[in-house]
Every structure is written in C-alpha cells, then in structure tokens.
Length: 169
Length: 103
Image (tube, rainbow over all chains, first blue to last red):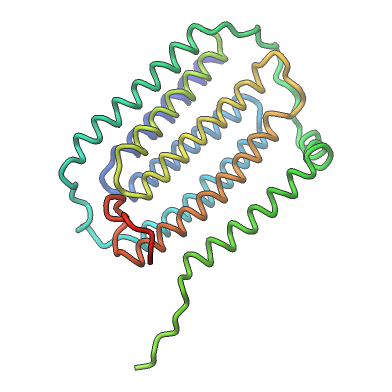
C-alpha cells in the first residue's frame, strides 16, 4: 500500500524538480503535466476518484493547454534563453530557501503525533459529493461559478488588449 | 512512519520544490508554475487529512479540493492573460524587466 504511494511521490517530485530546473520552458510545461498526473494518481490512491478526475481534466487537460499557448505566444525563439548574470546566485538562494522550508516542515511532520487512521477510506461516491455540493455547499458552488465566469471574461479582456483597430494600409 | 506522515512529507517536498522554482526562475510563466505546484501541495494535504484524519466525514476534503482546483484554474487564466499583456507591452516576460505596470 505504501510502496505505491512512495513510487507515485518519487515520480511526482522528480518530474516537478526537473520541470523547475529545465532551461527550455516547453519542456518544463510537459514535465509538469507528468507531475500533475502523479498528483492525480495520489488522489486515486487515497480513494478520492472525483478529485483525481477533476485534477486530470483541469490541470492535465486545460491548464497545460493554456500554458502551452502562453509559451508559444510569448517566446522569441532561442534568443531569450540565455541566463542573465546573477541568475545562478539567485537560484542557489532559492534552493536554500526551499530546503529550509522543507526541513522545517519535515521535522514538524516527523515529530507530530497524529491520531490513528481509520481502516477504511471515507466513502465519497459521486452521489455523496453531488449531495454535498448541491446541499450544504450550494452557495459556495454558486460563488465559484460566478468567480470563474468573471475571471475568464477578465482574462479574455486583459489578453485581448486595448483593441485599437489597425489602420488599413 | 505512518501513511499520513508519508503523505504529509510528500506534500511538504512538493511545496518546497514549487517554492524554490518560484524564487529561482525569472521567466514569469515558470514562476506561475511554481505557484501552481504549491497549490497542488496544499490540495495533497487536504486529501491526506480527509483520508487519514480521525474525524473523516463523508466528503468534506474532496469538496474543499474541488473548490481549490476551481479557484486555481481561475488564477491561472488571469495570470496567463496578465503575462501575455505584459509581453505585448514590453516584448519580454522576464520579471526583471517588468518593473513598471503603467502601459
């Protein structure tokens, strides 16, 4: 049971670390889709099938596509790949900060005392989830729907620019 | 080490990788990706406590994760639109060169 978890965790962490250290940004996006798939596999392992489904659909499907479009729209060939001076030092400090945060969190996790886990996973069928979403969380669901609509319309408005019509030549 | 602790260690390491990436890179798309990784690590925690926590109610953790994923999707869409807008103004998405917000 734990072996599968450790395998998934290692694959996810390795692809995430590789994505964060690659020079070519398209490779980073592709490696991150692997990492997000690993997170979905973790959800499956934990018994949250609907969350895994949402993760694959939204992250692996939609967000990675949006990211690829953004990468293709904003790159100027290989010319913007060379590193600026000082990037290496900043990367070293960033890795140091990440390692410090990881050390603090890992010490807290290893030293914490957690209550014994229940044997069986809590049952979260799609029917239960639908009941929860439409019953106690209906207001939150509506707010999230409004938020998504406003955010996507705003994203289109921001990305479309001021909309000056070009003069005919 | 219990399974819950392994899950929490996994999410801590994923958070640290995202943090290091967000701090180290100067490409704003990669910084956004690092932030996404940190959000994913938080979602991992939610699922882990839902699965292994002592008071596991029916579906609270999954509902929380679904809302978090929806908000993250909205954040990514707006972030990418801002990046494209900055690129149109400055012809670059390096964070060092995006020093002014006035178009």
